[in-house]
Length: 183
Image (cartoon, rainbow, N blue to C red; front, side, top):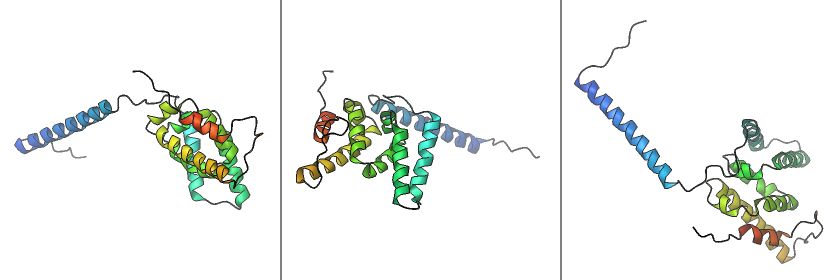
């Protein structure tokens, strides 16, 4: 194989100098961006394992295909995904997989929404300042507001004995209440 020609001379020196300056400019821009967002937590609740991340990515692809035999199969699929999510809600909400989590929320049954809200309760501040968590918090608040408005209109009956859990309105109030902290 022939050898690659080395650029010598003034033109090539100028080209290498411009490439170095461009690389340095990109590095400094990245550093400035990191300084701007230094107060945002990277992963306040921990990371998902690679297997979990891969699983939810594959489930997301399957969900996007939207190819189910009937509504029962789709409902069973969603129930299985929510069962797999149990105990990992906060990690999912603060990871890139949270986009999929947000897309599942409109299909979320009311009792599952209550369970997720009880998990989010007490972590509102961390979620609100997190890059992905803030979107998940916004979506879950919107869906909770939807269910609460239906309850207030009387179009949906308020379930009082769902695993002795708090009513949705109380969960929402507790979830969005942020206690001011002295810094």
